[in-house]
Structures are given as C-alpha cells and as structure tokens.
Image (cartoon, rainbow, N blue to C red; front, side, top):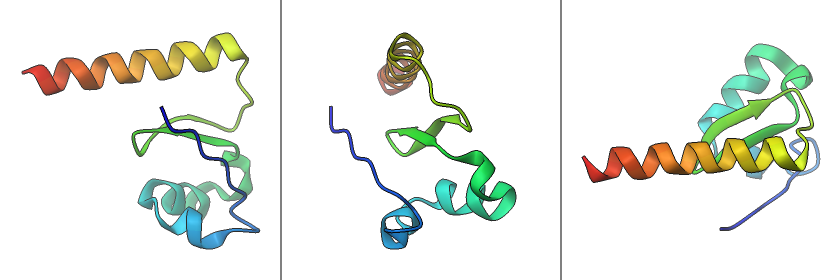
Length: 71
C-alpha cells in the first residue's frame, strides 16, 4: 500500500490531482483538512483519526472495493 502525504497549501499541484480534494476544499475550505483518501476516494475528512480508526477505515474501504471488483 502506498501512503502519500502532502500539504495543499505548499503543494497545490498534488491536491489538484484529485477532483474530490479540489471539490472538498472549494466547498468547505480548510475545515475539511485533513483529508484521507483510499484509492482516490475520500474516506475521512476534518479529523485526525487514531491508528485504530485509520486501520478500520482503510480496511473497510479496501474490502468493499475488492467485493465490488469480484462482481
């Protein structure tokens, strides 16, 4: 699994790579930060999750993606 971290204020080009990030920032401003994306999909916004919460969110999203791919 690849993990990338970037600051949209310092690296606006990175934020622009993801339409969901651009949309969230335009709609909510910096209140939506931090944003956590899994496979390009926002799975968490506006909070710093604990390690347990992060593992759960990432695991649930990946499991759902794998189930959908198998259909």
